[in-house]
Image 1: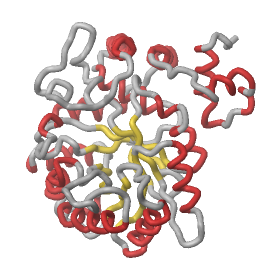
Image 2: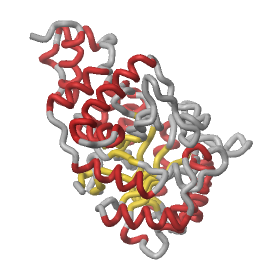
Image 3: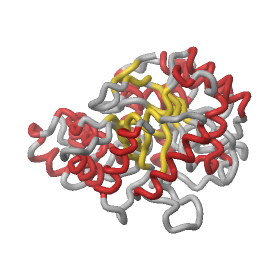
Length: 356
């Protein structure tokens, strides 16, 4: 396993992180999986053996039950693992049971620590942008949690580009500790993060951690032009996410993934993981599995090396539309692009027929 520094920090993390949405499978998360404690412990064993020592969870997942299962799975080996969790989504009817306020964050961290059976987290995320709470309050609260030893680092998730930049800029003021990472949605089909979030993270020194590179089950190899999602999967079990802008575009991506998978005698998920892993500005990616067999397959994708032609085939299937000001910049000031965005600007030029 490859290890990288997460953003502009000294925290070294594996390129693959094990996500725990399938752990427990209760409280509305039944379609995501039902990994219980014994199997979760074996999956942690498999991950550690492969060099994956970071595990990602959230108080949202099964309303805390995922944290409980993960806590049981790592019991007795806390010093061998890195643990991430998150808060922000509304859990409970109270007006302060969600968001990025001091009252919610401080209450959430204590509950998460108790469920996980630990006295600190290595990384704690604000799970969503809270435009109703002053950003200074959120930053100060996370800074204080670090100083109290309850968390080592913090990050944000599902922010827009301007919200990320505002948070980071304010957090650079004396007395505050900035976030070191953002967790964002990015797949071979859903590539809106290329517009701002991926280059912004690199330019700001914020690590780009990717959640659900398989599109919440869309790219599991069981869905296609003539294949509908089985009932025992998220997409076949009533899962509401993600939003798909263009169904035909999705099928083109799946066609490309299937073609490349055939070249490598691999599965569609393995190729999707390999493609996202190698994209510009991408840091660690969060993989997940509903069982040990899937986990073994997903871990094995780390060894798959795609050719440039294969990368290009997948990339061209769903290149983002050049929106303003990106079409204007690609057309009129391409050479002024920053290093983090040149790959994307080049793609926009190709889409507009301006390349070569």
